[in-house]
Image 1: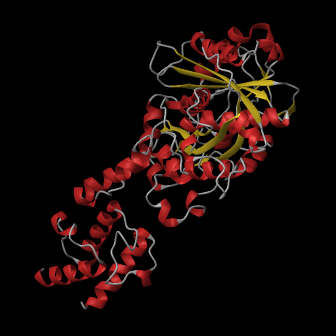
Image 2: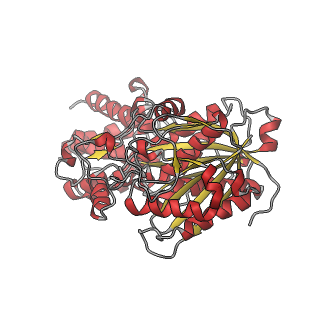
Length: 82
Length: 414
């Protein structure tokens, strides 16, 4: 799965859960500051990402995923490890 | 006893009910005596002892934004829909007309977010704790609807959710009256909501033998005061009133439907579910409401009854009315909206308060449906078959709840 595939999948999830337009979900965007995703929605996004990409995102790691790019890189690496 | 001089008026109404998605459609259906009761055809209802209910006429997901709705329990969705209608109806809009610090919310629910509780319990059992939604608690807490309305309308003078089963909606309106009299706000968004049509609540009420079992004829099942009444029909929905000090309403030139003149409350301390058979507690709530409002029995021309269609409850309420109103009861016409709407539990008192307000405003009382063979022992002048034109300056609305709660609201023409 390429980074672009992950970005596309993640954008779908963020749109579904938080209503953010898909095109706005770009690697440089901060979930909280740019996309207005609150902490509860962030938990939902992580859970949906786990189901979609077959990875596990522990809470300790989730708090470090500040931007969309952080999440894409994390899922890419976790996917390889899995 | 409140002796404050603050006059409180009703300036806005909102509702979403089994009869319609707003106040106008609900009122029209009540005047026509239409029933909102139908069969429960979903798989989850197949093995229940009762398979009828009064489901909402307009799904909130058809009205609300998808993303905002997905983190709201169904009871919260109803409350937001009704509150927005009431807010617009009161003439509040995008332009700020009340300071958030002077705007409070009192929106009750009898049960709270039970659909969320049940759905998330299924998730916990089937998929494990990590898959339970992070929105579970804010969606199931009984103050959730009040909080959702307060967030939506930006109310910062307080957000309250008094819980007293089927008296909750009336108690919320009474609390709103207290808050305005105490000077803690200028405007209150007050009402009730309930969304509890699911297997567990139905099984629970059915186990109490509280529900009508007339599954073969759903629209005839809710029949207050009729000899063949055999229990209530579970309904869902919400209703909201905008309460405002008369001073504040006049300053902004608001249309006034009626005055919320007083409220009375009591508790039976008799049994957790059964009404006190002589209606003594309910009579006390009625008397207190009239006293609070400065009204006498002879002033009352109409009573919007709690009348759920249970054999014991309807009888106890009729005795309470006789005790509280005496001979004046002979000049009072009574109606039972639950014959059409079913029983909206924590929303019932709010919806019936809204209908009482409209009855005063239009001087028109909707009929009680299904009263084919009136119970001789009831002894009330119940409006049936068609609406009745009245000429009265004051009306009462009763609500009672499991726990022995009695609440009466007194309204006067504006």
